[in-house]
Image (cartoon, rainbow, N blue to C red; front, side, top):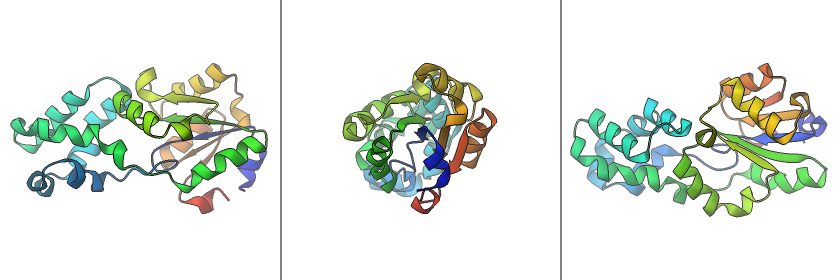
Length: 199
């Protein structure tokens, strides 16, 4: 296992693209009518300011769907876009890093999740993957707190809520900007690029 992880008391995981797959380019064909899926660029939905706002807990799923339809150029299709927001957790899969959680606990470490995630999408994800999330010693989810990575406050909230010292934590995220933000509050951080980055 990576020396940084070995030396940490607490291991903090991002969720999407670290513990669970997040492959938005595959979700539109699975969740919206075929004709619309062929015309609608997935970036318009999943890589938009409104998706960021959903993660921040400041807009609803319907508002995201309506905004996406407006930018697509046909406001009437928003009900057809809504399932792409509501159903994507159905198609997520556990990633290999999940297998480390029992090992980390066996070594006496605590394991946490810190993720940007919409309120309703995370509720569905948590239900579906309850066997994974039940192993966590704690979680901080952006939409529940109205704070998102890479804001320093969300890392500080994790530490204050669970009594953690930043220097005793390692944070694992697939986005360099989020890893760098963790370092700025005193955590160790690893940019996840695959299991080789953790071993």
